Amino acid sequence: MNLSSLLLTITAAGLAAAVFAPATQAATAPELLSGYTAQAGSPAVSARGQQFFTARHGREWSCASCHGAVPTKPGKHASTGKTIGALAPAFNPERFTDAAKAEKWFHRNCNDVVGRACTAAEKADVLSWLLTLKP
Image (cartoon, rainbow, N blue to C red; front, side, top):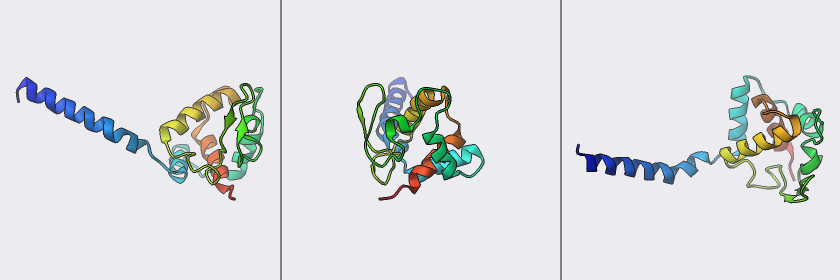
């Protein structure tokens, strides 16, 4: 294989990866829950998720500070006042459909609420509770 063939092959592979990468991030809330549960090595407990969501963890805010105690309606960011769409997937079908986006927001919000990254078990518990919320 000459250099130009090799470069063409690498370029084609890179383009294919770029085209298909967004599809690999697609998910459903139950799929994400399954992944977090597997990482945690134990079943999710929705009651524990609700408690985690509404409690303060030594910081100024809880999850509920912005998302509401029952996150089935739009919330409002406690600091900026920016509207936040409903968090529960049954009330906002866009929630938890992108694994990278879910991880990004868990990372940011857990840092604000808990002062650290949330564990897989904490994510599983919260997501399992959110999945129990139905119209």
